[in-house]
Structures are given as C-alpha cells and as structure tokens.
Image (spheres, rainbow, N blue to C red):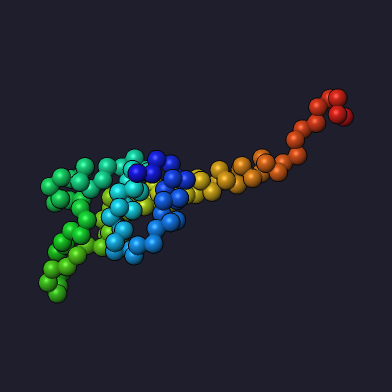
Amino acid sequence: MPRTPQDFVSKWKRAEACERQSVQEHFIDLCALVGHETPMQQDPSGTRFAFEMGAAKTSGGSGWAEPVDNPRVQAIAAAAKELVEQRDRWLNLEVTVTFAERPRSEAER
C-alpha cells in the first residue's frame, strides 16, 4: 500500500488495468494515503459506506449510488486533491531552491 504521495503516483502511473478492474484498490490506497479508514474498516456491515452500494431512487426502481454522491468519498477526494496541490507546491519550491542563486560569502565578495 502506498505510504507517500510519490509511492501512490508511482504505483498508479504503471497501472494498465481498466477502471472497473482497479477502482476499489485505487480507492483503498487513496484512503490509506490521506489517513482515512477504508469502507470495510469504517462500516463492516456495509450499510453506510461501501463499494457498489444500492441506492433508493425517487423513480425508475432501484439503482446504484455513484461514488460522488457519497459525502465520505467527496471528503477523501478533497483531501487527495489537497495532497496533490501540496506536492506540486513542494516540487515548485524544490525547483526554486535548486536554481536560486546561492548567497555569496564575505570572502567571495
């Protein structure tokens, strides 16, 4: 399981499986990355927070809840987005520091 944003990106950059084949593992890795319990850890009964959870619809019979309809999934996605933005800021800072002119010592002046 990825421990750092770099591990997560490295693992999933290599993934060739289709979305349907990898979505649950991707989500579990994302939970681990942001320090959130997985659906099974948080809701072992699978009645409130689970993959492919049935949902009541106002018309047209039963259906499936889209992940974006779940507030917990939205919170995890928001935390992941913040991690990516933070990583980008760190990478930008590293580049800035790498290419910045170093201060000159008294002897060099």
